[in-house]
Figure 1 (cartoon, one colour):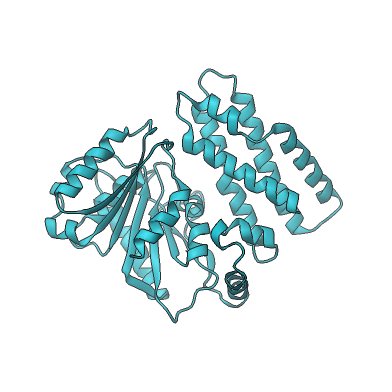
Figure 2: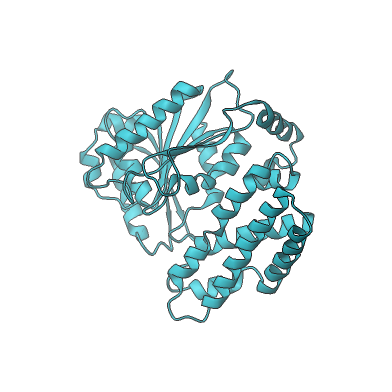
Length: 350
């Protein structure tokens, strides 16, 4: 199993890296350099197909499905490498990462290698943490992933992740994270689960009412998000001084729109590669800007919302009185940088 674990983790990381770095101009070079070896992918799929033929074990079937997802994604990338304009198709194939996580996460309490897949490297050898996660998963009904009216074909619900070692005896920080345009909270939860599980934070992933957030008429989506937040605050012991609203792309833009409202309860805003307009400042007050902390992330390679807009946003927000940390990431395209989560959490806890 160690060999399978290594291959799955490396393959998932490869697809994440392609999404991170690829632009319409460099996508083929990036994909060919990073994509998992197709012959190795085929060999793993054949091996696990043989295992499933000889076994009716549901866990083996799940592992085989994860392997097949990665094999199909590898084959897609390599088949597109010679096409003249393969950018969006290759990006789509990189969605293998959340689909694999969705299949494997239920096995985390039974297989150490799966458990470690959902822990960051800094804590993978922390026996006390792993024991507490295992014990909580066996005794508590409120922990793990919970989907509320959030099937893949529905809108407006939410997915909630509560660490398996959750205890009501202490307050927990809440991360409300918003997907990008056309996205869904059910899949977006994987951008934060590993680090929230490792560091002790609750993650709420709302799904927009429409195909994206109501940027021109934000009231309905804002009300829906706040309703979900209040539901979670009634059920769990949430630290009211640690309420983060984070979002990517359209979700990043919406995190600013909703988070800068005068009566917003959010204490920290983390807009990631948003589309920023100076008029946003006119919708808030200097008091609100001084009351909230902002962590702005943007990639130098962003092909959808050029980096210049983020630099302007940083200057305008700072000049208006906001406490802004601006992270311009050189090798980042229009994709969420999972490896920034630990930096965000360190900032969040100060």
